[in-house]
Length: 343
Image (spheres, rainbow, N blue to C red):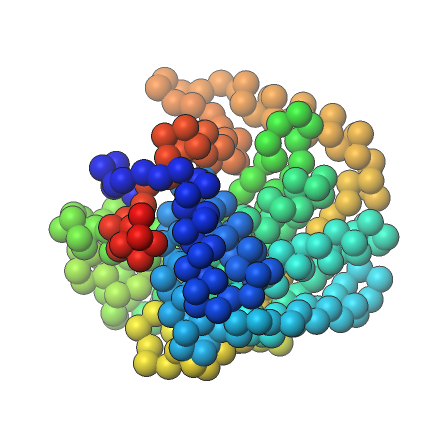
């Protein structure tokens, strides 16, 4: 986000986002979930998945793609597995419900694995991993998305940016949190470089025939995490997201999605799938053992030697620091969203 962007208090932003979703007809529980997930992203500095999406979600509610009053259905499939039917509503609602179901399953079976079908875009995957960790569970969340990332040595868009998010509770501290895309950079980075007419880093984007480029105006697709030389790693991890969120749930493959943006059809549901896995430490070595172990592990990690001018951080450290800054200074908001929210 531009450092000169206007900043607003969390409470004001949340209230305006909630109001606009209400005007678009979103039911109280579905809009509450969407506000929670978008504010998570905006507070932690994941602006691409934060309050800037309010206008998009409202347009999809108005256009009929999103069910304004979804009735979630939970189907327990085994001792530690279930499916949640999102009824084509806001994806945040179904995803948070899946975490709740996963925790219930994990309390009994040790692990709760929950697939989600008939859902939609759900923002930052880390919001759902964090929701489980804040209740004392190790949690994994993922989704597949629209094709915009080439395969290793590929010459077409195949996978989405397909995030993988993990979180774990830490005694007397904020959770350990890893939320990462499996592409080298997000698409919004390309758009930003276009607006600035600035070159892209080497090995993060490609032309429409798959040739790596640093010209943001020629970039047609993203490269997988690892870039030109090691992109097979990112491409493989993107497939992990598709395996869990689409194949296990019987939902839409990356190349088959109705585009999130730019398409003429905003009335047909997209049948997105997501996946959540929740683990209860009590059912393994025990919660006390886990708490002691992760405290020791993180202490050693943060205390390890660093190269000159460097700083070692655990997953989540950067995001928590950014959240503290934004809670104190306000959350930056882009001009289009300022206008849409009437800030």
